[in-house]
Length: 144
Image 1 (cartoon, rainbow, N blue to C red):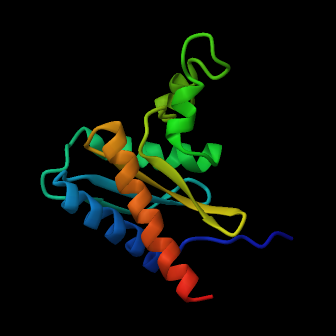
Image 2 (image 1 turned 30 degrees about the vertical axis):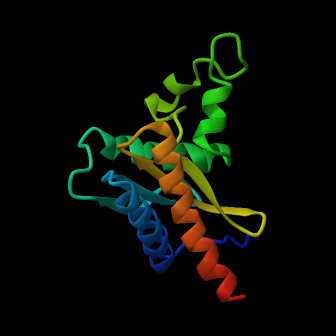
């Protein structure tokens, strides 16, 4: 029997709020997606002005980060010609995203979900996703 840790909707809202605050701070409206431990979407926000083309990218960044249990930026580094994961972005119906902006969410050593962010530069997307993780970490540490 397995015991599975999973983000709940309040956790998802915390992640989104942290990401939204950073996006507002840098002046880049974002699409923000939160997935559960299985890569399934549990919450999504498209800020006013978030790019329509970034909706699926944000969702797929979260899906990818969850699946590989690493940042999508890390996947991008090994997805270059001659590297071991070159061409992986074309797998799983094109859902694997090798661009920064997707990060796994941990509870201890377990990956319990992921956040995916899109609409800015790769660095901006990563920083906004990290702000979401930081907000989540601040809340979970207070509850320990």
